[in-house]
Image: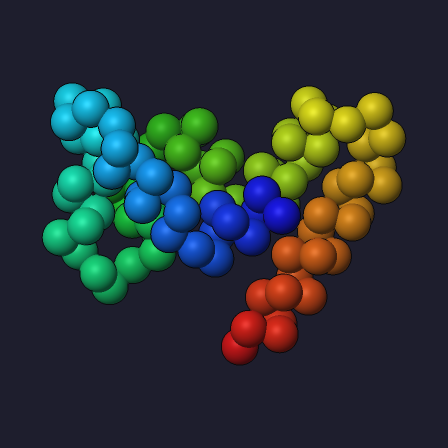
Length: 94
């Protein structure tokens, strides 16, 4: 579910509007709102693509792996289920 929210919606950008202006500027949210041609993850890669952490959170496989490792005790099952759910949702939404 986290992968779907992060990669297939603008939920982060919408909720970030409640943050203080300096924090939004640091996260590039205000700058992203002026550019509508990209998803937020694509925008982050374009703006800060040299940063390892940015590349990590913009890759569904990488982000799913580390979230599963950090948040669950049954890592393998959680990783497989999260990826299957994400890619089935992605295919269904095309």
